[in-house]
Length: 336
Ligand code: 13P
Image 1 (tube, rainbow, N blue to C red):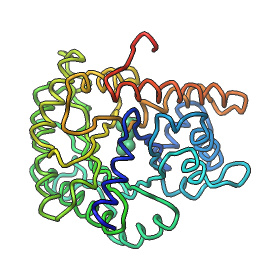
Image 2: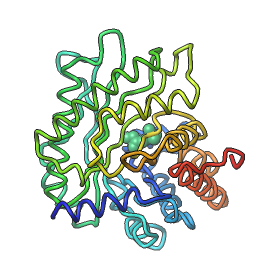
Image 3: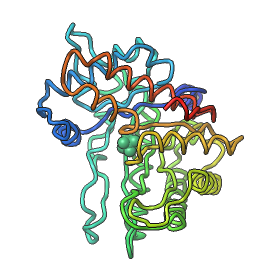
Image 4: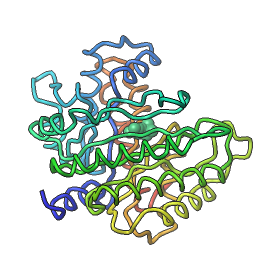
C-alpha cells in the first residue's frame, strides 16, 4: 500500500470532531475490569459488553475507529453479526491491538519491554483479512529514581518502530503508543523530561527504520504530574507542558496525535484535551484514543444487566460527544 493510502486512513482516524475508542483490553485486563464491578469474568460477559459498546447509537459521529482485541475482532453479537462489521457499518474503522503485552525487561526487571514481534507479519495478514485498517502497539515506561533506563527507552522505541514498519508493509496504519505511566510521585517537570526523551527516541527509531510518518498516528501520554505528586498542576499547566513537549519532538508530517487517558478521571482527561486544543493552531490534529476515560462510566452503568444497556450506551455516547468537542477545543464543561 502506498503512503498516500496509509495517510488517507490516518487522516480518517483523526478526522475533525472525532477520536478513537480503545476497546482492546486484553482478556486479563478485561477480567479485572469486570471483577471490579462484581461481574463474572467470562467470555460471554466480555462479548455482551463489547457488543453493547460497538452498537451504541450515533457512536460513529464522534468515534472514527475502534481498537479491538484478538478475541473481539472474532466475536459476534446475539444475531451473529461480527462486532467488527457492526463497527464498520457505523462508520468506525476496525483496528487491532497486535502487541503481546509488556514483560519484565531482562537486566532491569522493574521495567518493561513489549513483546509480539515474532510472527507479526503473518498475524497482520490475518487481521487485514478480517478487515483491520489500523493496529496498535503499546510500550510502557515507568518513572522512578533511576528509571526509565536508557535500555528501556531504546529497546521499546526499537520495537515500536519494527512493529510500525511491519504494519505499514501490511497496509495498516500503526498507532505508535509509547506510554509514560503516571504512577509515582514525580513532578510535572520530570514527566516532561522523560516524555521528551522517550518521544525523541521513538522518532529517531521510526526514521531509522524508514517508517512513513504521514501514515502513523502517535498515541502518547499527556504530560501530567505523577498520581502521588503533592503539587498537582492546573489543567492549563499540564496542557502547556504537553504541547511544549510534543512541539519539540513530533514532526509536523505526523497527521495526528491521539492521547491515551492513562488513569486520569474521565472529566480530567477531557478537560486536558480541550485545553491542549485551545493552545492551537497545532501542527497535527490532537484528539483522543481513550480506553478507561470513555468506557468506565458505561461499564458502571451496565452492571451486567440487559435492562441497563441503553443507560450504558448513553453514558458512552455522552463521553464520546464531549471528547469529540474537546478535540476541537469546543468542550463545554457545564455539560459534564
Ligand atoms: P487508557 O485511555 O485507559 O489509558 O487506555 C488507552 C489504551 O489503549 C492503553 O493502551
